[in-house]
Length: 153
Image (cartoon, rainbow, N blue to C red; front, side):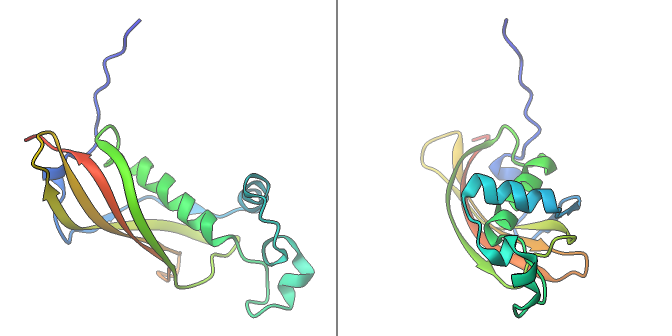
């Protein structure tokens, strides 16, 4: 049995440099932190020990920074702009600017910064800035990303 896949993702030509594409929100839960600790093996008491958390600079436990990054990739996928047209995630840098807290409701803002057409037809490079933002509009994380994306030419 074969399936006809109709991607809804953006091709390289569809991205507008400087335009902000915003995702839906998602609340960070206790289950997210517990599951991420189990999958990653990161049981740092900053994330898993309530009493330790009360004594740290934040006054409570915080979620893993890497969890925020991973959630940002999921929110990006749910937007649909990368669906079926992203060929490869090539590179990224991540800067954490504020703690991610259990109970935060976050969304992402994707801002294309550069489009580079390849000499080979059908693909090119997209550079983008992705910001993870909480319910108070506080930026939790910024990530400069390079992706290979399908093009129409």
